[in-house]
Length: 554
Figure 1 (cartoon, one colour):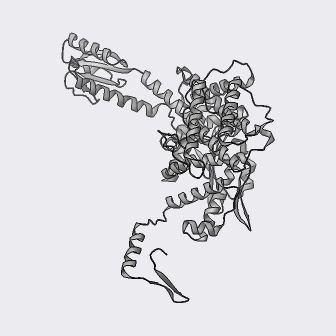
Figure 2 (spheres, rainbow, N blue to C red):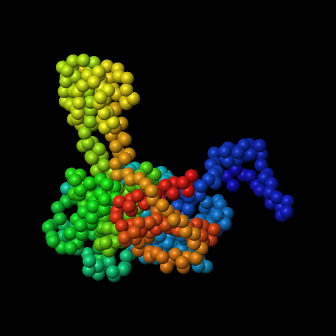
Figure 3 (cartoon, helix red, strand yellow):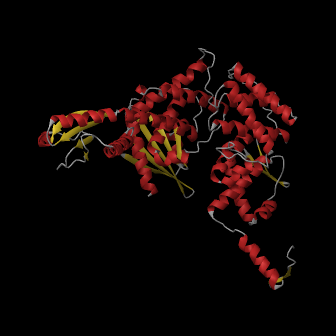
């Protein structure tokens, strides 16, 4: 070894180091600089790195001993890692093949690439070091750096320039997460072809449901030819079709040629039904929100393509949506489930649901901002002083509506329950909050009133779209035999809320909520069955279920 230290091993006795004091100090310095940790984050990071290595090197076998030596952990730890990875591979219809030569990932080339895109983007968010290692994020804002294990830095720059040219050609900006999705796919595709892995599924070419857009077709051909020339490779027609599908699934907002085909009407009908169902569930008329339908449909159209072609996108804010808007998220997911089922579309994933929810939260903001702040103005005496303050308030704050101008001695006979803001030129002896301001409304007054209005908006945001559980009873049924529950439910109406938690919905003439607790292998699985006659009850039932789940978490 570099330090010149020797090791003496004696069976049944132990190990002894032979070294000088200087050598021992050098060894201690090296050990002190090393980081040792066995926490959950490090285990997850190791498993993610092994997962990525297996996906990238599907042509090669690896061994448990090799991984054990590489990560300096026991063979048992690696076996546990591979078991976890094997479970995750099932989400992508992939398998972990184990032979006498070792272990490797096997499955469809398309599924391997989908898994790579998903894991790269997820690991880039969880472990910043992976961003540099795999170059999965955009150059400046997303710190896209060299992906040594995949492709050179110059090559990544080539792909960035290629997409910049595409944006200029279409006169659009490819927004996130679509940019990263497309960039990552092109890099993975090229790397896989260089390693001899190509898409060969003839179904990709013989997709009769594929509607060809000539402009996107030309863009695809242009991309393919430039990549072939740069890397001296041949890209098959199957690969080209897959690139075309990506391009039609990234939400580009340019004018498509008008067509009355059913496929063109689907996004419009899907969007309209989604808005209608969520309006009924929340009690908010989203149909009246200007611009919501048009903006949401622009998202829905490529989303349907992504669902059709099994192209996954990741929403970096998904965990925040689940934490901050759990009720609304579940309501949105149920609405999406109902619309997808109606149009025979595969159910969208949670990332897509979160994106759809963001449009409705934005609509909530518009609704809140458009609601007037009912304001009453009070002064000690003198109508002119009060009128001056009222005029200045309306001129300064466009969302204020003056509903009364009175003197303080007339205050006792006024109902203030429905008043949002009370502004007075004098101190008052009332139980309601109020603000004191001068008749001339100086800058300090304006700031105080603006802060108060924002507080009113925040309170309105909290209640907008929120339903109460009300008197919604929940029947609890414990089941030990899985065959018993299979007779009661069908998979097509089952919605996953997380690990071992599901909602089962069924429309009918009666309203009820039943909690099935299935005991299996020391693990409990929860299925909340909702029978509903209208969307308003469905919304209350969802609220009740979230209350039950919250109590369980506590």
